[in-house]
Amino acid sequence: MKNNANNQQGIFESMIDSVIILNREGRIEEINQAALNLLGYRSKEELLQKPLSSVSENFALEKIMDKIPLPDYEMVYLDREKKKIPVNVNVTARRDTQGEIKDIILVARDIRKIKGVIKKLTESKEELESSYLRLQESKDELVHSEKLAFTGRIAANIAHEIRNPLTNVAISVEQLKKATEPDDPRTEDIDIIKRNVERADYLITELLNCARPPKLNVRLTDANRLLNRALKNTLESTMTKNKSQKIEVVKKFSSKPPIIRMDKEQMERAFSNLILNAIEAMPKRGKLTIITGFDENFFVVKIQDTGKGISEEDIITIYDPFFSTKPGGVGLGLTLCYGIIVSHGGTIEVESKLRKGTIFTVSLPVGRH
Image 1: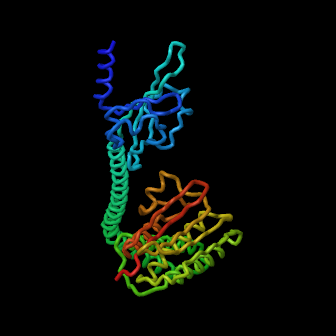
Image 2: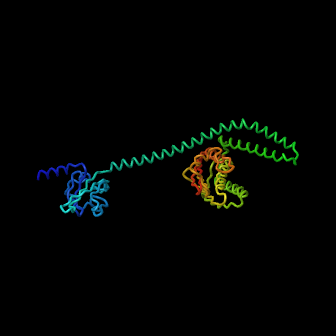
Image 3: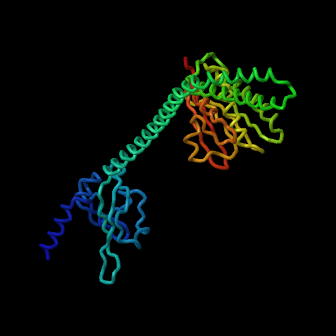
């Protein structure tokens, strides 16, 4: 029996894992060398009969007594210097012949290295996700740029192939109108042809404006004042067309004047397009909110409506030429906005929920020369 006890003690002392044996009151009855090494103590006499709480953090024995055996229980040990050691513990018990617990055995393994690896993996995962998002954004920008370049090549051909015969049609129609009496019933047909020729010419011009980078006439401009003018002019023109439309306008402009180098006409046109889209998304009533501010080296404009929103399928193609969800829409407004904003070194982003509304966010670099 003595040899058996010695063998058990030898196994106990040679175990790689840290082992602490507690009595029912939670005091340390036995501790092996691995546990002493982990906690930084020289001899077990320093710890025997001390409560486990002296070498652990927030440990309550009564909370786990009815759960024993308890595998993979996470605890925090405290070493001699009271430094924290995260450990994974398997809690078991020795029982008497009546099944009552005599003592509790804690077999612990230091998981600091595992925690470190998990932390690094988490950080790597976050970095990877961030890199993926940046790559996706770069890819989207590249796709938009390539679409515009492709549109530019098509637009140049259209301008050459269609404008010449279109000009001939326009001249012929004008001559035909001069040769027709004002009360001739054919005058109305001639006017229809003339209007459609003008519309076709306008579409070609707009397509060319979208496709080629605009030539910027940059100067220092108060972006808040420019935005305010775009808002005023757009509201006046739309309210004249639809007097029953009730739009609540909320302006939250930055107190610091945003003096930015920009092409006033081009940027006012871009802002007017975005404001017009917001108003047209709320044909009866709604709330238009315009917020401006600074985010590090960027001046940020948010144009928000409470309209019908944009579906997920449509949101990836809203900047494409000739894409429109509006009846009779040409589908060049957002393409034009994109080209103007990018040519200023800025970005345009969109968030939308169906039947909730849409937010367009324009970011323009401050101090760009």
